[in-house]
Image (cartoon, rainbow, N blue to C red; front, side):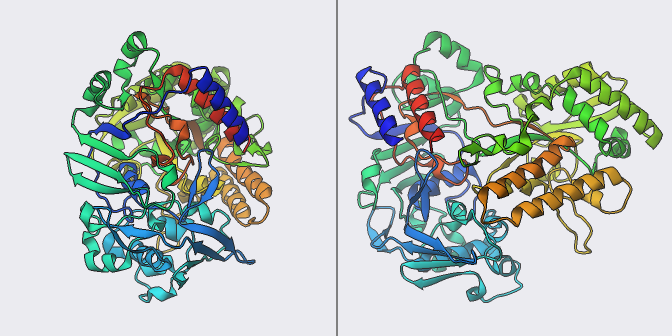
Length: 613
């Protein structure tokens, strides 16, 4: 298939639909939000992770078509019982300081030291869950909690300088994909011991083993990445220098500076897209929509908001499947999405929680497996919504509920797109179902610590939520709804919709039966580790239980932003998880902005190649 792609691109060059490469290979851009840390071992923030992605290599990486490639590991294998993963490291890879001077060789010990740092509670790594919960490393959670203090009991060891071994508690077929996150990156052990909490607080307090090193770092001034000329894969690093200049008004100034030729890319906000499309239509392109985050609406099964909004009444209503179905059928998702994606909402609409193109088996996308047959017909249908309304009124009246049911829609203060989305949602839900049945109440949540104070605290009735895939397996999309327990064994409630709390007691037997079926189906799917098609099909069947019972309403993946750019994004690494999408490796800087014709040709070639992988 790569030969086909090469032929397509060659024809594009002959036809003038691929831009010429720039003589100056320095990429210039603005940024308006400073990183909170350079510490790739502790941060889950995407902007923070961009630093580590470009200056630190991972054991494996992905090419432009989501195919795994050797990285710092040249090869790897798993034991027959699927509990021991062994990686054989590339020899001769060096650590470099911020001047590009070599320091030491990268060895297996650096992965062990880094993982110990991640699991040391004092450093408060926000990505340690990938080690403990996703990758299932032996004794990782116990060490992090302080239940064991001898790190040699944790399932990671350097067999020798070039052999790294991980032991897991259960077969984890997707383990290799987990290693593409910062928490599995190496760090030079002696430097970690020396720096401790000060590690990576400045560019001279960390070492580099990736395509670039951070040669200059002045917070709220500039970041400069310089190509590591001695990098093991330097032939695939085409941009020599990356210069990012800070400006708090970057979103406004970058498009202007792009017009003047002062920067090489600029995002175009929704309020100026139309103007650019009318004045510069040939160079307005889009970023690549990546299914790394799925957006969906959750019903809250543990409302904790003020009595004036009648949380007890909501609890009765939300435990009625016909009530939930009436909301799901009345929800015109394309109508509400106009606040976020006004031009082409159908391109990002999702009918499953697991997004399209995230995973496939035997050439079949996960969302097209047999259990999802007909799922596209489950959503907006005004007539069906009214039928469910009638059933719900009868059943809820008998259960002691009163109407209209108050439904609290909480959004983040200052997020105008989200607020506008909820305004549209309120309009169409009340229009279809009637204000005699439901009253949508818009509530502005805090602008700071929003998740902890709203969703996790149960301060909503119906909320747009999101989750990002952590590894290449559908199991990752069950994590938001997993059971969570208190010390006494009762359900704490997962931090998304708290639905598992309904398993305690028999107040709502219908909901309890649905959840028991769902959790049993998830457990059955997780138990299958050798037959990928069977595993994926079982996960699809589990997700279908949530959809059939309107426990969650799938929504969209984040639309690709409009932009002008001198980069062909389809050259870059691609995977709907990990840090691959954040890297500049493989990309060329072109001498002019990519035109829409060039973009569409590159996208078509990429999609064709991707579809044949």
